Length: 127
Ligand SMILES: [Zn+2]
Image 1 (spheres, helix red, strand yellow):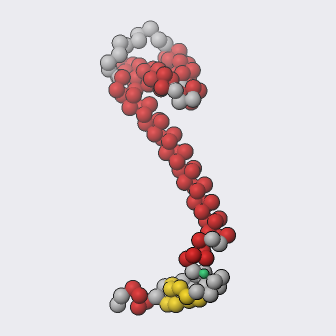
Image 2: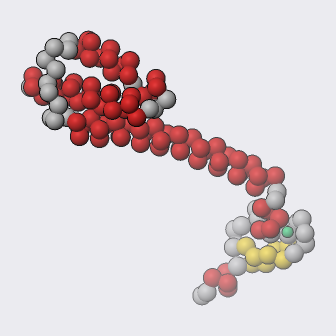
């Protein structure tokens, strides 16, 4: 049985045109053209946009975290070990140069990544 055999014809409540819907889609009362300009479609689009915007922000934050992590991993091991920086000072320095405080600047990214690499290599040296 082809798909068109299962579709039923309905009349659009807005424009009176005939459109097709699957059995069980009795809630479809508008043809596609009328649905697209309906308030419900606009609300659905706004909700979708808000959801996608939130997802984009989340994804960008994750991307920034991962970039930082990659930089830290790349720098790890190629740097001299800073025996002289006490752990609490290292934490303070990381907080001070974190990209979140500097508009995500490249300099802040590199400095923070380097500091995190120092912390990572220190942790390994201890283990
Ligand atoms: Zn219509």
